[in-house]
Length: 286
Image (tube, rainbow, N blue to C red; front, side, top):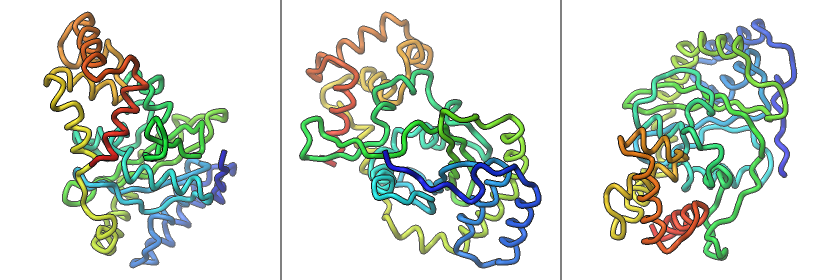
């Protein structure tokens, strides 16, 4: 497993003084392309973390990687794989598509009810590969992390995500830390919007707008499955349990199970893991 370099703030006592010092430096800098990194460092004084990443989402195009503190080649490949393909199933990306507002969120609160038991989550960091029988390679992404997310609304319906992560075997993010972060979201959002107004155009040129992954997700099984079966399939891939699928679609649990059985039969598969593998293979042809 790759190791990730801890931030200078990790494992230190929460410090309001450090927060104000970092924010003061950002305000003084005015036009500073390093604002995302500075903001992450400042947030570490309110809620220490071990790893962090910043992305910007713009509609249905690929997310833009803005900053991360990953230092190993394996972890960097994980970022590339996420931007290339797997972001489409990220609970935050899905929530953004439904109008997620600025705020602080725990990944476990955004995720569907069965997401952390789903086959997708077990292979959450994947990189499609034509050389593998199952169609993908699991990246050596740091495992066992609990994630706290800051969502920051930007102009033109874009959204910035700042993810702060700790190892799952350590203390979780406390209510006090979450409250402190929630209090500073308006300020952090304003500073990030200033950065985005200054540097967003140049950052948006790479990678280019690309809907192919979303289209592959929406079109999966299009010529084999009925519209209802495709709805059920998409919810399975997103990590919903059969109970959740039934509740969201307004159908009985028995009907959900019938749809799942028909989907598996039509796609010539017999398990949820095979469904995930088949979906990942479909991404290679887009």
